[in-house]
Length: 415
Image (cartoon, rainbow, N blue to C red):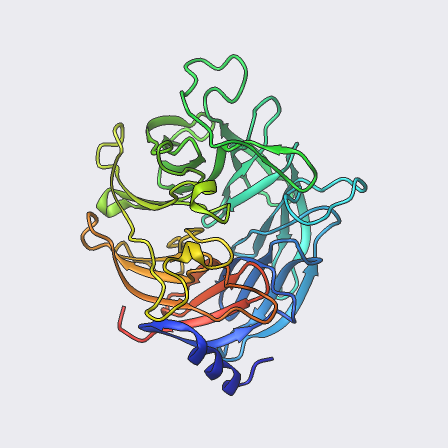
């Protein structure tokens, strides 16, 4: 557990502007942190899977002193790196890992794990929604009874979009599904898309870069990230039969692998973050966070992109591509219900460039107004800022994908 002086030292060593570190946890020395959310006084950190852990629960009633109260392990050869909660129901994805050193036996557990959370520190297994192939990747569950997940479907190449009915959490069922036209043999009107290639996971299985990475619903619309196939806006008024309204893609010539499509409904805008995968610009392509205008739903238009973070004056790197590790976007604070809500201020993670806050009052010119980039922990060449959740009180919970753990950060300027 870090002391106040430890946190002050970490803050002094960090590259910060209009932000400061107020609390930290190394998650009992495990790190390995992926998605983070907060409910009440508790913060839930899902783990990448490089460690034995699936989930860490922390008491953050005092955000300057996050306390680990529970750690839960994942099944062998499986990772559970996402976590969502609605009421007394917690869900985690269950997926074949695409990193680490899995073994051939036992086989991975693939699907959606559903837990009862009457006790916020003790998730109890309730049911399991099985998904074939590599299983379930990203999940969105913020309004009962439907979970919106990216997972495999029989006969479909790459991941598809499942809408899962959790009206009875003990018996999850599929309410509807959708896949990218052309990823199933015989699809009418397949999309003409170019892939930046395939990736092999740690089990040696091929992961296509054409597929559904995740979806964020709002009302009867769903904003779907389709990796190298770009952004798609779906009509989900009929959950059993989602329909494409419009789409846009910038890959090529820019890098693809669209990770998150965050709607800003009152402005008719979507923020689209493309995930960095490889350590160099040449290998990964020009990955950006894009502003997309969807006022005409059938003709989304890309209007601008976020400026790239730059190393501070006096640093040894001309650009963050020169720094060890990967540089570029990963994810956004997603304006989840109960969290900090803004259609003007966008929090994003940039791997070795840390956490960035942009003002998009003028969507044609996103402007950075604050950042926090910690010193890497011992044994790590650079930070790997991964996921971010901003609480309704404005406190920021930031995870590092390797050893850094959980950082609690506040803005020193009024939001």
